[in-house]
Length: 157
Ligand SMILES: O=C(O)C(=O)C[C@]1(C(=O)O)C=C[C@@H](O)C=C1
Image (spheres, rainbow, N blue to C red):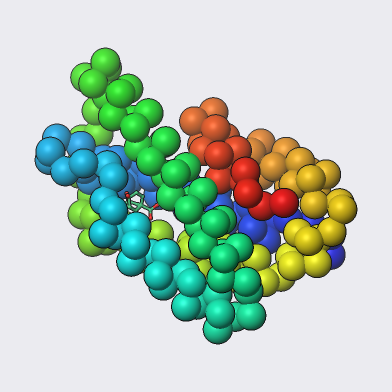
C-alpha cells in the first residue's frame, strides 16, 4: 500500500540478520568487525546505483551508513556475548565471501525500497509511517535485531 515504509524496513531487517553470520565469520579470526575498505566499496556502489534508480545518492548513502552502523552494533553485541558465554559460541564459522553477496542483495532491496517510498519519506507522515513499519517489522525479530533495526532507521525521515 502507498504510505508505508515496509519496503525499506523489511529488507533492512534481512540485512541486519546477516550480521549474525558476519559476526560468526569473524569470531576468533582476529579480523576486526570494522572493515573501512569494504564500507567504502559498499557506499560507492550505493551512490552509483542510487543515481541509476533515480534515488537521491546522498539520501541513499546516509541510509546505508545507518545499515552498516546497525550491522556493527549487532556484530559487537555477539562478540561480547560469546566472550562471556563460551557455550553459546557458534559451532560453524561461515565464509565471509558467501555472506557478502547476501548483504549486497539486501542493500539492493533497500535501494528499491527507497525508490518505492520517496513520497512518504519526504512528506509529513514519514515519522508515523516509520513507527508503524517499525512496529510491524520488529515484531518478528529477536531483541538484538530490534535494536539494530532502530539504529538502521534513524535517518529515514
Ligand atoms: O562485510 C563486512 O565485513 C561487514 O561487517 C558488513 C558491513 C556492512 O554492513 O556492509 C559492516 C561493517 C564493516 O565495516 C563492513 C561492512
